[in-house]
Image (cartoon, rainbow, N blue to C red; front, side, top):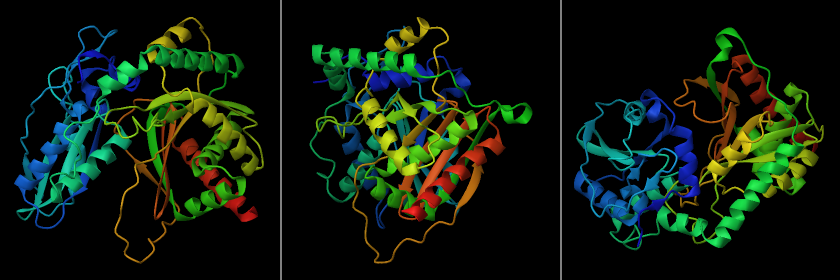
Length: 418
């Protein structure tokens, strides 16, 4: 049974990111997803399936006690919740046109649950469920868990699984046991050690119009094939190869051989918590040495082991880390951040035809949020290629594009040598 208590470490990280934001930015912790509906499904079937999923996961029925910003709590999950399902007629417009408007509506976490859903109809026929959630309720992995359970429940009422799954309150209780506290102490030691070793390096700042937040996404079919080829040659993960290429580009701009980076740790390494619906992501530092190494395969190997060492300490108390940094004025800050998005395996229909590869190109976007590190690369694979979204503050468009293309060149040129 879930009871009121402290936030889990992942929830606490989200809270630290948003607690000091002005109300005009509260929506920036939201994320929206479009879930395509199978033909013939009606509003009542969608509502029933969605209700079974929400009833299963305590995180989707949780409100928060935020009166003391330094000691937030998660309240006992509500036994009931609203199953209202607003319907929007798209009028022939693409479903994606409705995402930003709905995602921009803030959640009042002390009074309402951190999700909402809207049924999109096209000419009176249900086409998509637009699911918006606050990051404290579910991260990207958990969102995919929800999508799969919802899809299963549409065709089979038992598709969402058992009636009740563990919630973040159980995770928090586990993290504050004596064993959990020892892990937290080790994680704090990891931070302290890297702060001793890392040089005080920063990306050069842009001026004028380049001082704001810019966002660009590189999409490339050849880059995915190249990253996989280099990973096989170096006997490391694809994520390590992409991180190494990105880190090398940053290090060369900064003129440093040792680069302190922030890595997004999913913290889903235990079978017990792997598919828990909540936010478990946390930033953890890693020191990449020899970051300007010409041989990307060798750099990827070193990056791989540095990353694994960091991920061992991915679950940590951000309050304790903040106190540590306060005791160390002038401590080096991570130069950049990296997240290689991983999602639960999913069964996709096989059309028998290979997906067309995406031609390398950069597109510029208006950032939905500026929460997070100053220079943040988010990489993701698909059947059509590799995409890397770079959100950067005070770096400028020119340098942002330079980083992405230099990374792309490193992947392709190294693959050509394998």
